[in-house]
Length: 320
Ligand SMILES: Cc1cc2nc3c(=O)[nH]c(=O)nc-3n(C[C@H](O)[C@H](O)[C@H](O)COP(=O)(O)O)c2cc1C
Image 1 (spheres, rainbow, N blue to C red):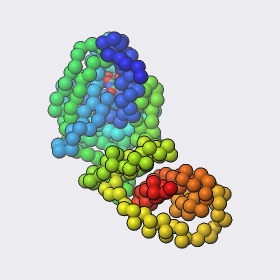
Image 2 (image 1 turned 90 degrees about the horizontal axis):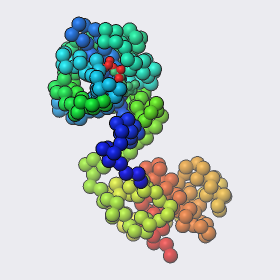
Image 3 (image 1 turned 180 degrees about the vertical axis):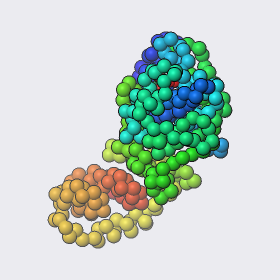
Image 4 (image 1 turned 90 degrees about the vertical axis):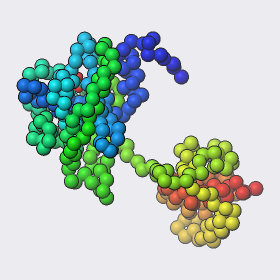
């Protein structure tokens, strides 16, 4: 590991560390209006949501790194105490990047970026039509930390109204693939969230046994990854010996119709992601049997068949 205290680094070095390690960051496309009625539009990735009752979001229009001057967004927030925060989708990312260019305060950044302004219901700043998720906000507080270049100005806002495109929803939740959000990472790197979406079962409301209760022979196996063990720890109970024996008996009674038995059969079932038949084939092999059985456990875990994985993994521990 490398170890740093911020006092020993330059501000750009600290900034680079934060950008790389606190990532991917959601991007707030913030629209404000000046006291003279000029629209401003800029992206901010020092941004997140912090509570739902009332809905609180915050972002930081920091002082400019170059000369520690305040950004137009900050000045507008101080004078008008209102903004719109919109989500940034992949289809608009180039225009959003354009909105981050430094135009003088009297330039309308809707015009410069080519994004379309539409009226809001409660606050004065305009919404961005192209974004499928828009929040009308009032500024509750701006907390400043320091006066040097790149110092934070945390604008804490309450959401007064959400505007969300109807077609984003699947079964009542915003579908990550449909919304197609982008996020900011280090340097010029961005992430297209939909490309990396996966499902993780949540332990909310469950009485999980925890990692430490996973039997030692499973924890010490070289086949299972830390994530595999985490999945076991996420379970509420461990099957008992007779449940394991019953399960294995049933697997042994099954017939392998599709392919012949032996290692080739095991490999064919593995390529088909068929962990039940992988186990059946592995049970018929004498050499490297344990490893192959454990590979069927891994395959079951990948398919979220935790009951199968438990019984099979426990069976390995019962083998001579
Ligand atoms: C994706 C992205 C994220 C950004 N995040 C921030 C941020 O969190 N804080 C910040 O001060 N500037 C951030 N910037 C830079 C501002 O958008 C830029 O300084 C902009 O010119 C500010 O405009 P304004 O002076 O009109 O407010 C970001 C730029 C991009 C492209």
